[in-house]
Image (cartoon, rainbow, N blue to C red; front, side, top):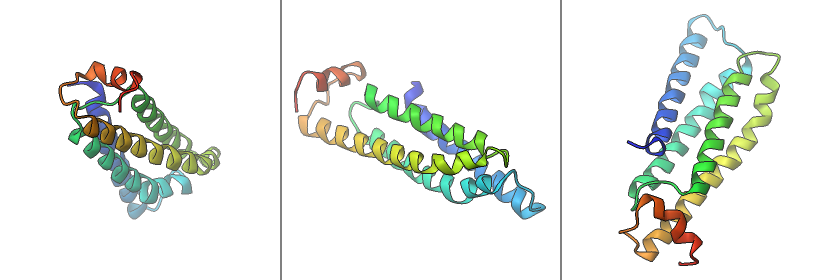
Length: 145
């Protein structure tokens, strides 16, 4: 299978593991890395799992299945921001950076879902069910609707 087919589900599973870890650590002895880590595990990551599931659903219903270059960049930025949020929330000294990352994550997640939805709608309207994965970018670059 292709990397871009699996990146969203794998990221979602990693977030689920982090959520479970956060809940177990907080419920067990109450020791967590930082308040930002707790907020990520209880609020931000569950919302991101929903967003990633919606994005994956949009991609799976698309024919051909697979993101365009723009969508790949947005997905890569989204995953990079998630990694940055996790790493900055591991310490109280850097957890303030996590708080500044939340709005950026929100904007990128909304933009990713919007771009995936618009691209899928354009593909459905064009009726290009015979296009190959590599032809997706060419389809839009050619000025076709």
